[in-house]
Amino acid sequence: MASTLLKQILHPDSRPHPWDLYADLRREPVSVQDDGTHVVGGYEEITALLRDPRVSVDPGKAAAGGRIGTGTQEPGQAPPFLVRDNPAHDRLRGQAMRHFGPPELPGGVEGLRTMVEDLVRHRIDRLTGRTEFDLVSEVAYPVPVLVICHLLGIPPQDADALAHSSEDAVRGPEFQVDPYDPEVTAARTHASQELGTYFTAHIERLRENPGEDMLSRMIHDDGPRGRMSTPELLNTAITLFVGGHETTVNLIASCMLLLLRHPDQLARLQADPSLTAGAIEETLRMEPSVHMRARIAVDDIRVGDHHVIPRGSSIILNIAAGNRDPRRFPDPDTFDITRPDNAHLSFSGGIHYCFGAALGRMEGQIAVRRLVQRLVVPRLLQDPPPYRVPADLRGPSALHLAVDDVRAA
Image (tube, rainbow, N blue to C red; front, side, top):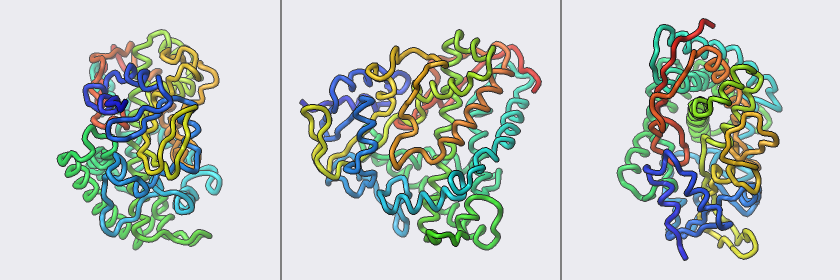
């Protein structure tokens, strides 16, 4: 029997607490929806599909009328590497990665540590003397936005306007209750056009006057893979900007939310800051920044003993459901910052493993460690907090806190 479970998950009313729906999803290896979408919520099944060559990220390979593939590509644009299969994926990702991190730039991410520390310290300093504030707008949002702007050579004063467009731009149709919603489609198109206009001009500025930033180096790269075309540069730059801050904002906010909901874990972290890395990993497992990923079957794929996903079918991998699969994680709904063997799925897997995982981890660890050290008796003023609109990029849109004081750095 076809299910409407995905529509319930995608509905805004489910955003504060989707976990019971995710548990229902895990009852079967695959939940077939009334629109033909195949939704997968088990850890083992998702892990296998993330690495299966018969699973594509290219929406153009979806069967007509499916949930995935309903969006349109703007004329003159080239799809970013996030929605490209090999060999195009490895070529484009490799051209970007050589200016960002290992193996060709092994110290690239670590070289940003001092900058991130300074940004976090400055943002927390601004809270001195205040007893109430929104942690998202004051710390969790500006830090990763300014870091990615630095990496891409974007003037800091442009950050807010660009970031305002990014949330609408990433509202993929496959994660809407109605993938053909004209209002959402219009907002996404407008936001994408705004980002495209800005980055087209920005690329031309850097082409004429390159800096020391990652995007300048990509524009002028004469390495073994050759230069990206202008459409490829445009979509890679937009992808890096959006992906470089959206998920990390959620990570910082969600980690602080979990710690404040679990005072025993907060106390452990306050007593032993070396546990910060574990707190970030447990947040990634329990409250991942990305809840769902879209895929397409390019061949018939058997999942479990009896279910076959037909060729051309839309697939939704519910990463967040897999991260709480009791078959993989003991006491999966328990927040434990010392959890061993925490092999969550939050950075995806296979060739599409998250490009910026190392940077996101570093930003999250620095921000949370300093917040826990400096906020005196922090407490939630609203729980659950308001959540962002997208169901796939789930995170608090605001996190209103009260504190007794803010310690000096």
